[in-house]
Length: 356
Ligand SMILES: *Cc1c(COP(=O)(O)O)cnc(C)c1O
Image (cartoon, rainbow, N blue to C red; front, side, top):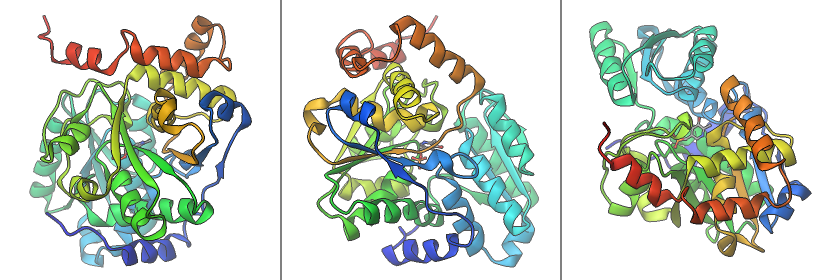
């Protein structure tokens, strides 16, 4: 396993990134707070130049490579935002970038990576297949292979988000972080340990793709069915490095259904004038699903990204029409959802049922 970054690496990443990215805002919204029954601070990584927090990691990684490594070019695999992050960073540092994406990714995410100058290879049904193809391309072309989860520089870079967050709000009781590979949540743990040791770092994943959650609960990296439509959280396996960090430092790990995530996405749109992609709304969904855990606490949720597809945005409208509008009752609807047939356990049952 690669060595986890130290706090000093996160501080160094911030120095580096100050030349590229301004700090992102963090706001709370009275209408949203009324639904949540607590003050929810929303950290706006949807305001990053590629629409997601991962760009912090990409730029940090590229700046730490040798000129020879950059000249060889990079290859990676991604469901979308890691692709854009790496493409953006490679363009900034003059390196070539190839991204293998599953054929199922939203076309807009593939096009966005390609518009940033990456060569996009669509391959296979899922991340597992995309990873194999990326490994092959890297070996054939003697290029630098980047794991989206097991790369210390990516953790150090995304850790700068949590420097900003804890410096702005040193007294938080909890910060909730959506997880795919786990780099974001692991970085939150590393920074919280230094700046806010009493703040609980809580991870959240979709119950339709619980590999990171189950890996953390079982203490060993496992594979799980990956059936979420929330592509930022879509991974079929645990990653060793972030799991190692989370194992000792993460306070808890929740699951929410894709439906609960969509409802939180609608609340952000209606109450926080924020267009989040599904993954960017998952942290809020976790807070709303457990009012007894968060009411009256100082809570931050990370809106990790805003790359909603046209289909996502259209579905937000459908939900609004179906629910009779986003109302102050949205939280209650979400909580009921948690106990109904949208229950995560039901989802998991469905996911493991044989498919005809
Ligand atoms: C990648 C991503 C995540 C998950 O982050 P990891 O570091 O892979 O756990 C969450 N939200 C968005 C928008 C993402 O792009």
